[in-house]
Image (tube, rainbow, N blue to C red; front, side, top):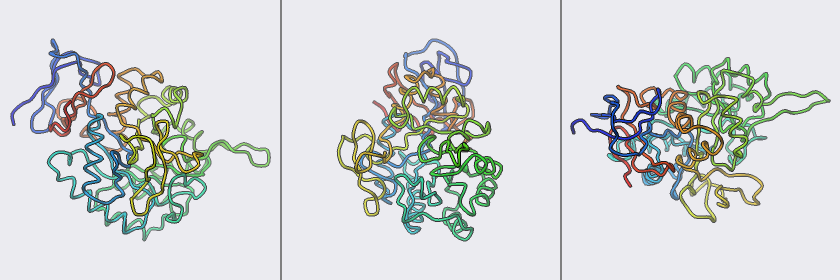
Length: 381
């Protein structure tokens, strides 16, 4: 196929330009200013670096249909790139997920959406396990994580770990060596531990405020936790589940201002209930998952005292970021270039000549018109 064009209000690193963007063979040719044929916005393709499923599918189901079904649902809401995210689980289930990912990356339509995998666990604190199944938690022993790395064979893009666990700092050094984003989450660590972990390659905080320690008091003295560390350590980046449920708009706006849009990414943390109606659903695989339910636009654990994950989509995240005070350009940046950069996906995230031809086209209300991933139309309204 020859050179193709999209025309509209193009969101570039230098601002919004009216005109057209060209692409060929999956690569952006350039941006040309001029009169736009349509009033739609053309943004870089939305990048979701923490997502478990959607449309009734979970990546832990371990089938190609589940991967492609979830991808199809999220493509219709603006996502062009995603990192399928695991839950703490048996090794055989984790290893099987690698083989499924290898296969679906070859799919003619949605395969290009799958960049790599985000491992969420199994190296987490039992005190901050949240919706993670506690029976599969363990410490990061070298023999185990090297076996995982060998089995993955380059498929891991990021790994979330509790840094206070024995062996976690050594794992951080190893992940940095491999160019894998080392993230801290589901952790009870205090400031000194987080600071030390940052020196050992941990650069990011998983679902900021959720599953992590806060300011605590011991014998009268106060000790900052992981939440406070996110603000105190400049080098740390964060991600927020911008569904308006995990954090209220007032707090989302504060995070954007305090960390800056270069250091804050939007994530769905969506589970299989994304795109579905309210009622019962399952977090994790159909065989080893945990029952939960959807209510008021969020997934809840039985009893309703804790969230099981979100049912958000990337278009909803952008709308909520704007409602929380971000400009359109900043909201899009936190959904595209920031998550791509912090996970070392340097070939995408911006509309710049030479980068991957990923685009999300939407109207003034962030209703999705079309999505292009690697030069292929994966959704069109």
